[in-house]
Image 1 (tube, helix red, strand yellow):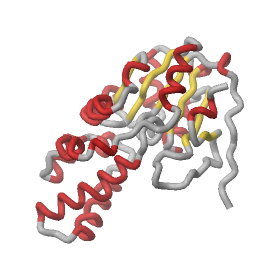
Image 2: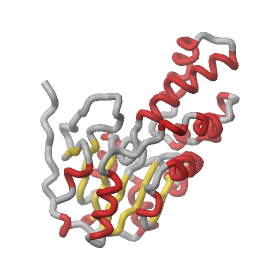
Image 3: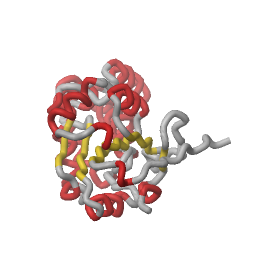
Length: 224
């Protein structure tokens, strides 16, 4: 039986600022999942004379060791650790970078109703550059913020206090949409006014509604 959806119930008149995650929220996370779980292990196996299964097992263990930290998304860190040019490898399969349905419609709607909209991502600045070149999302934001600018990952509640100082928003009138529950929990601890979980981060996995936060599968659900 599918998880029951907790539907968002806010009114846009209650909100001034919208913070949007990138990977899994605006962009299809299939690219990232395929890149780290399939493509990088394949290349790593070829370079190091391992079987794909051996390489995948070894790399997943390394990934898990730095999960929810800035190192996990740091392309320079992984290039050094694995002896591979990670940004170059991302560019080789950048045709898989796709914007989720209704995202551009939603971003245009937010501008139409006069909201301030920021992209706030754990992604490394080199990843952000690659994805902005492949999509049309960049011009829709007032500011683009990578977690490396803050010096913390979004999973840490201190991140949001530092972001508030940087962007000067009223947290009681701010909405965050993200596909990661750890991130939503840290924002909740900080006191973020409105939280929305994205229930369909990847086109290759079924919709999974959060049982903790209001959820949407697609952003057209937030357009009246």
